[in-house]
Image 1 (cartoon, helix red, strand yellow):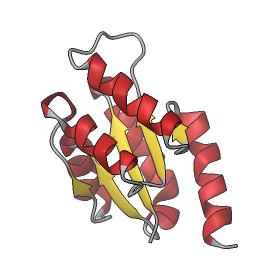
Image 2: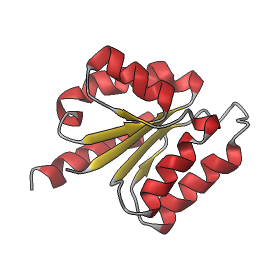
Image 3: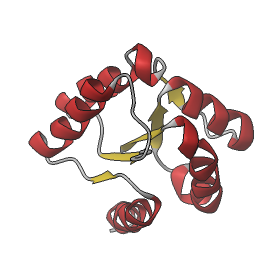
Image 4: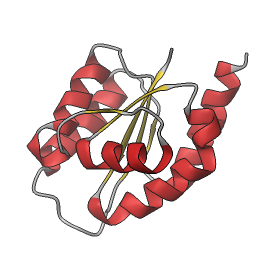
Length: 126
């Protein structure tokens, strides 16, 4: 089963929940991992059995990055808040870099996330 990582900054949590709501029928066909708060919210609202890591600032981004580096993640959807400074910015940049290094598709906004899931759906049903 392919794995999708779901991450959302605090100001993007509601947007992530709305995104998941629109795609829950597709997402149930994937192993889902997420940082703690994002994954907990998705589990509480949609019962998708998301495996949670630590909170992003406490190492969750790095945990997901380790899975990207070991090719245990197929897609990353990271709804970032580009207008708010994050205390763990180096961890975020490292995760984004790892996606590039390991050629993992990465969406950092809702529109690109929709496109990524369309691609994942086609691959799933090929």
